[in-house]
Image 1 (tube, rainbow, N blue to C red):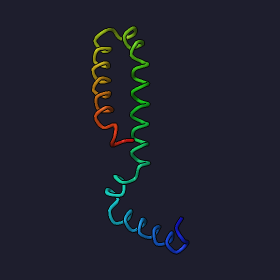
Image 2: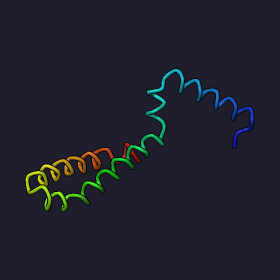
Image 3: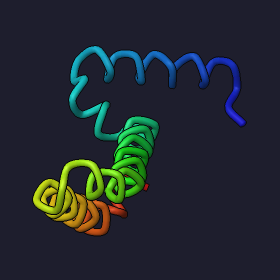
Image 4: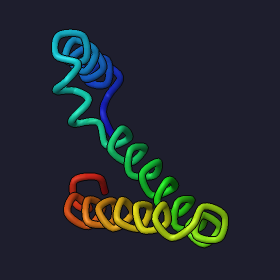
Length: 85
């Protein structure tokens, strides 16, 4: 536990870092990575769930395209799983 003075200094350093280099701060912020991973996972689940309906309603070609995109998405999720978690 930090003292009040140390906590104030830490917040000042964090604020200065956020203002001076927002791109670097965003890479360090684990909440941003977690949010990105959740959105990507949500999109993946929704697309996989819609694949049977796409096959029935639109035919086999759009379903194959959707399956290829989802396979690439799964590969990206697997490749960068440690970066986002």
